[in-house]
Amino acid sequence: MRIAIAGASGRMGHMLIEAVLDAPDLQLAVALDRAGSSTLGQDAGAFLGRNTGVLITDQLDALAGADCLIDFTRPEGTLEHLKACVQHGTGIVIGTTGFDDSGRAAIEVAAQKIGVVFAPNMSVGVNATFKLLEMAAKILNSGYDVEVFEAHHRNKVDAPSGTALKMGETVASAWNVALPDVATWTRHGDTGVRKPGTIGFSVVRGGDIVGDHTVFFCGNGERIEITHRSTTRANYAAGSLRAARFLATKHNGLYDMQAVLGLS
Image (cartoon, rainbow, N blue to C red; front, top):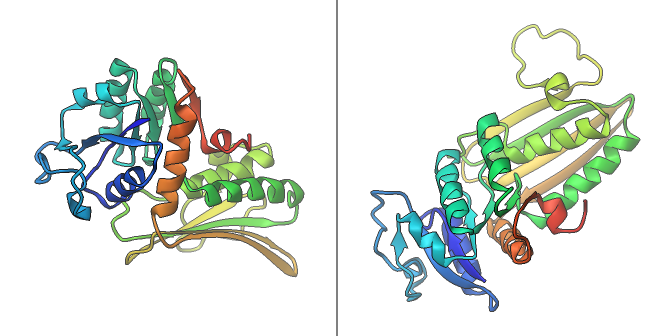
């Protein structure tokens, strides 16, 4: 497969480029970066000291030469890339988080024409954790207070993380309720006693934390904790390549990592 990478000069872009270059069944075809980036025109493998022959560009028409784009940028950039993918019939793996309702709707519309994998977290381990949470929430559906905790590096701009939101949605779905109806996003001052059946969220931003997530099921006399910790972005890259390979046989449709892993 011919793979395009968005955000080629970023940390995740570097991780994805290296992963594609090391995959024998994949070919780096396009490396995108934002207009005005100092990396434009450089070889995409320069940070590795490797000559790939692929120069970093801001020209989205380059996506015509790719089978699939992997995008971990920002919502506004991803939506522009999505339009170009539709234009050129290029599949897309979206790891970007922080979309509003209109952004998610645009992704759903695009998926009618191209294959899309859209997931808040591409890690195989995280998606196994989602499945464990679903099972736990169905069992612990009464008498337990649920709290979702997440921690990320200081440069992450959206909160709670897409993964934390997905964890909350997984629990709420198992309880047959909608997350917005039961979520407690902030606590400050005299909050009163906790309302049964709610799902609380807490967030840490600091340092270079790649990603920590824990869901607490707090009962009387016991506490169950389901935790996933990432110490490297390599697991996100590995899952993204798995998603790209999944799209090789999909001409259109909207999928998540549960579908990619055969868990849904």
